Length: 344
Image (cartoon, rainbow, N blue to C red; front, side):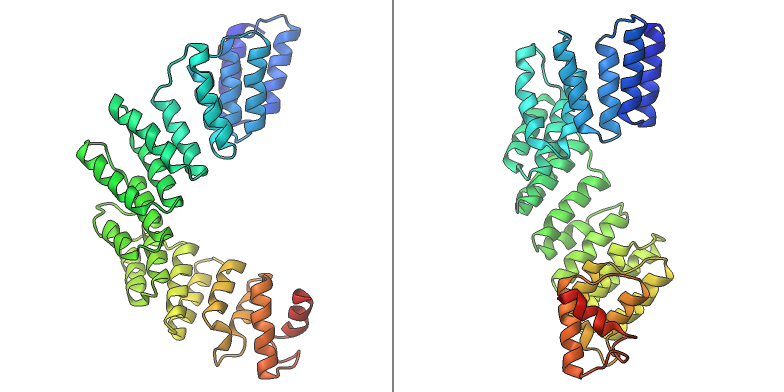
């Protein structure tokens, strides 16, 4: 195997998101054939691991470069920082400090990956600091801004998220739907439903995430008519509602004691091929779904969709059985013994 063949083979692995074992095998075959591996080969291996979400293997390849006395370049650091940013965000930021020691200058890709790491760790102050560097260098982009806005939202800084959205407009930085969705979600996560609705109404382009986040914000604020209006607009735009969309609309109806609407949305959710999850069932029960005139409607729905109730759902349903003095047969086809066992 020649160097060029090894390079092409490793690049194919990267593009196909292949498992890291294949990269190891190729490097081992190259060593047996006395083919000298270089920085490009290891960079491709790190990138393959990063794209297939194997951060530990990516780190092993990166460390192996150091043991082989290989000079890691900016691409090496960018790949490993991005690989670590999702789950090992603190380690990713520490690697940034190592770049000057290698006489390497971070670029916009480096900072974008660091901001992504900050988003995962809710380190919004660091994210803003990195973004400030990018703004001053004129390399700021929508991806970095979206991650920074998300970081602010995770840390409760929805106002800072909206300020950043305005800064992007002032600096003529392109604001795509992902950026607006991040700002909308920041407002939704922190209970700022009016601000979320303002972002929603100001968007020219909307996707399923936009509508779902808006409905979730309205659901939390107990604004069920508005939430259902958003769901209807979503359908008019020929966007297929997701399980999150249906869940938000259903929970909004439940919060407003609009049980017939909630049951209609439940049936529509099923017709769309979705099933209830434990979290959604628990949310409905929390808002009184189990006390419907229709006996144990939520438990029946959970049995039909084969959903195992969590502790909260089981406790609510068991209490409803006790209050109604339902027998095992009456409680949704033998549901009561199952609930007793679940709670115990």
